[in-house]
Image (cartoon, rainbow over all chains, first blue to last red; front, side, top):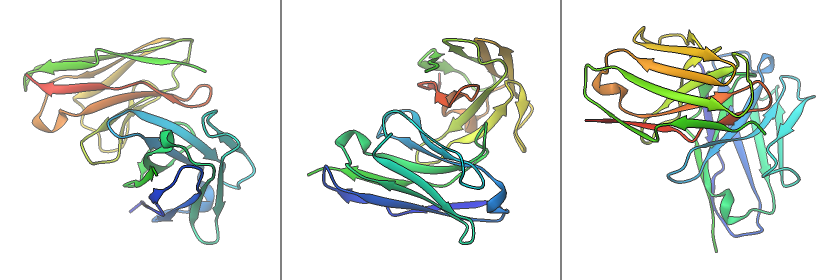
Amino acid sequence: EVQLVESGGGLVQPGGSLRLSCAASGFTFSSYEMNWVRQAPGKGLEWVSYISSSGSTIYYADSVKGRFTISRDNAKNSLYLQMNSLRAEDTAVYYCARGRTSLGYWGQGTLVTVSS
Amino acid sequence: EIVMTQSPATLSVSPGERATLSCRASQSVSSNLAWYQQKPGQAPRLLIYGASTRATGIPARFSGSGSGTEFTLTISSLQSEDFAVYYCQQYNRGYTFGQGTKLEIK
């Protein structure tokens, strides 16, 4: 069974940093592209970042470019999102999701709250 | 950036009736479109990809159609578990989601 479990969310002050993790199991992690997608409270879905299976190709939404860094460790079956210079508008539930086109599997999400 | 616009924002339908949700792209996305269902407190679930192909385990009452800029998700006979928020997503160039349609019980 495919499982994606996010962790690392919490309360952080504006300008602060946070690192999210996504632990994958039930499939060959190194063969799949991964994404981060976020959802602000009561709002819709916003794609954040993509990483190819090898990690060689990476894309970011304009809203996070230069502040967020996606990475993966295929030996540890893990996906990461390093978030720096956090702003109030980054407050959201962050989901990791598997896929290169449509996103067939999602984690349960981890809540990031940016507030003083 | 390709903008996805869903309509209506809220749709009220009685159980057993048909629901039709629309999604429009600001430029052609070919058939590179997916639909997701999201219930409160849950992650989104993939329903349709390639505009019209049901994902694994999705009931046949869900169907997708369209190409280019106009797309439709149809739920043929609404069950109680179908009342949720539905999102379209294009993956033709980057990834963008529509703002969602809330399907509520009439």
